[in-house]
Image: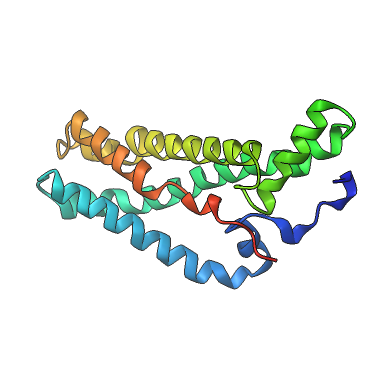
Length: 175
């Protein structure tokens, strides 16, 4: 693939969809909020946490926003090879061939081992940030008020990370 062949329609879901069809945000935002709500409430219920309603009210908006922030961090990692590295690295070198293979993330992350690996890494890094943001930031007020202990905070943050990680990064882009 030559440097000047990168096309916008190759962007991975859902980033390309959100950019090209901004109306999609109307569906994505409430759906993401619903998923975050479900995971948060079910996890608290499973852990037999009291005052779930108060904790939910204190945390859901921060959880939702921080989840999007973590998703954008992961998406940025996926966009580095096609938009930055492909313009800087010569395709005549071994590294250039690897970068070219990494650019397949845009079309199909299952196309080769490089694309798949970087996608797995992006999902893991995003999940890590979801965990970190929830543990260090969103659940802190509930901890400070005595509604949660440290172990419960860790379990909720881990549950949010595992169940809300951006597995859609694995979806091939359709064009």
